[in-house]
Length: 188
Image 1 (cartoon, rainbow, N blue to C red):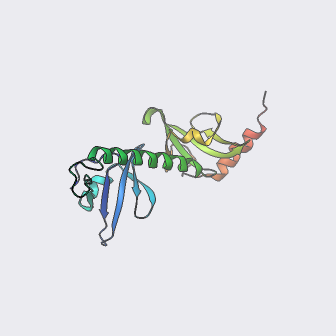
Image 2 (cartoon, rainbow, N blue to C red):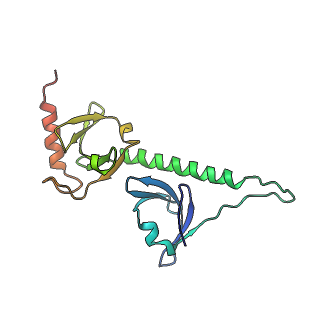
Image 3 (cartoon, rainbow, N blue to C red):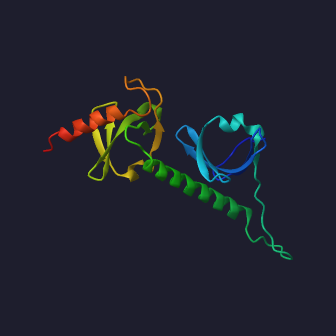
């Protein structure tokens, strides 16, 4: 039974159908947890309460020290293994965030948390302009041009329900309208 799980923690997840997956907790992304499924070689973001809801299906892997036959000193100490797993989880999380920035599609509506939910800003991706990504700030009237690296340390969430009349997490027509508007703005 799982009480707490730390970044880098390896665990086995058992499904009701009897399948077993080796996974690693890679940290939080906004209000979700990032899980690396080592068996399927893919990432999955899950709600915060996912681990609590599935605690009966989770078995934490306990790291052990490795010894050579006839030696009393371990080859790898427990602390070294834990440090390695935390570093691996951190690199996996960075890779996931980097790839997430690559997979943004024309018309995607998403939010960026700057300092918590109150200061959340909502954007729509309007395409590329001069090698940069054109974003329109939905809560205002600003356009911004960013590099892919801009997403790297941001907490990005796709929007399902919005207070705006534009509902959904992808609106290609709205993105097209904003891009056309941006292209006719005179530059001084």
